[in-house]
Length: 99
Image (cartoon, rainbow, N blue to C red; front, side, top):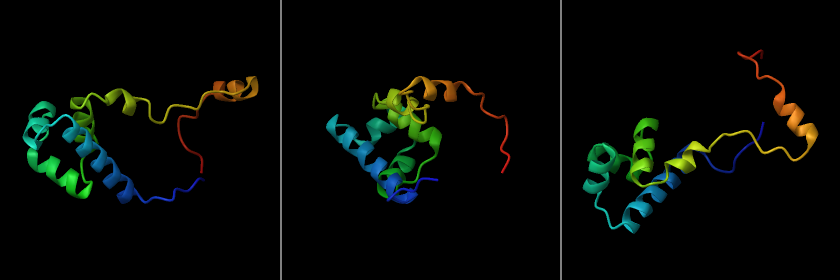
């Protein structure tokens, strides 16, 4: 298992700051982003201040900012660097955990 130097709340706040920076780079008010995304202003404020937001609302915000394609690429399998790695990726993923 790999460990991160960041906690979940720290990453949430960092993402919130990036969303806020994107909003401000477009010179949008919170109301503008809220209307364009379908997320309430209260939810947007809570996200920008505390990093708290549902996944659905996060995706709506990112989509309104034109960056949903970046999120869609998260958690894809790594690109194979060799034939051996490609063969390992071809092994079927189990339908349920065993540990």
